[in-house]
Length: 303
Image (cartoon, rainbow, N blue to C red; front, side, top):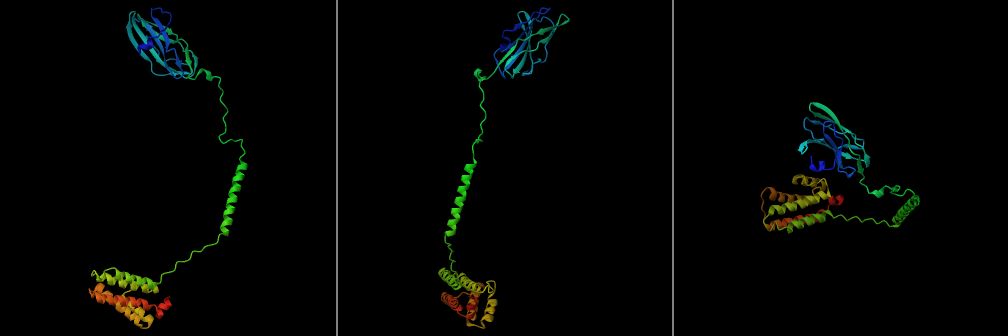
């Protein structure tokens, strides 16, 4: 218990028959709403025996206990002294009366009772004193309920309809522009370009004969597949040649294609290594075949 609490001036009750004096006080005297103040009871002197204090106070509705009772016994000039402190909190401004407290005193083998009466508690408000006459204003609508919104809504709807009508009229008057289809690249042109890439790749000059003949063979097969999907690149050379012979009635172009694909297969799979001059001759024959094969009956039918 702090000495500052019990150091305040205490209200002195009449001395009891045994000579003890009961003092009671409320500290501090300046109390605002929500502050913790202390109700203090002090009995002196207690030469023999003990003093029984209640565990808590009987408080009005606007006051409540703010902690446990604190009890202390010490000695002063007049003799032993007992002090009890009760923390209390007030939640409403105004004057509040604390109920008297009955104490139990034991002295000389006798049990006596004494009463501690507290002064009136005055609690101040935390608000300024001039706010009592202030009257709050009536709440106002956020969106403004008294305004007429329907004219604005009609105007916005008319603007939207007018904009949509102008857009539709302009769209109908706009001439339709059809995108011209991109011309398809002829299969023969694609095959000739593939053969030219094989020649310009440098594979033949680098001694990579297998790569050179693979590119030439792929260009010829892709050309046939473009003319007739049934002559796909998955057919073997024998199957491809046999199909061409049946369709062309033994045309020389079919025999020439068989010889070119056969020569390429020997390079790819049988380790044939023709001289550069021979390879260039066969490349030229493949190019001539592509240029002339489109004139026969099968090419005309495919086109």
